[in-house]
Image (cartoon, rainbow, N blue to C red; front, side, top):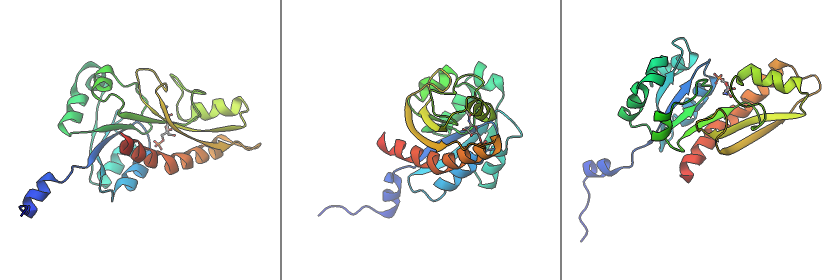
Length: 205
Ligand code: GAR
């Protein structure tokens, strides 16, 4: 007869959840949405929220949800292993850039090869690169009288907005489109697609 595992032993072999660290620089509406999406997940959890801005709304969303959060400065990020060590200590599996504006340094890229995802508010390769974020992207799209735009979710490498594309979602640009209306359309696409794409990417890996 096969031995019956006692509950305590079974718990110890139960699979750990995949842990996400979210990086954000701004208001953090994507952070809020990702936290909410994975709140009841049995396989994925948001374990850490980090920001390069002490006043970032993203940190408040984390605190409200009881998730560990921290602010870091340029030296922590670019001149030391402080951020990498924190990610290792917290056993982070994937890093998610949710409106994060600094380039990821090599120490973090090497440790999390193909495990860092970013959302960008345009259809890359259009309107990407240094300085292309948030309203700068939308203004450029409107200036060029594009007929459509959208979002791109991609793997992060050592160049801005350049890694392998995992998913894109499009929206039409109306004749009377303004910065505000376009921001709303893009925000909606991000909320609908980013968490589900993260989930699918992790499942496939
Ligand atoms: C999002 O629209 C995201 O795509 C963009 O910043 C916004 C953050 O909004 N990211 C970039 O432009 C990166 N190049 P949020 O703070 O409300 O989530």
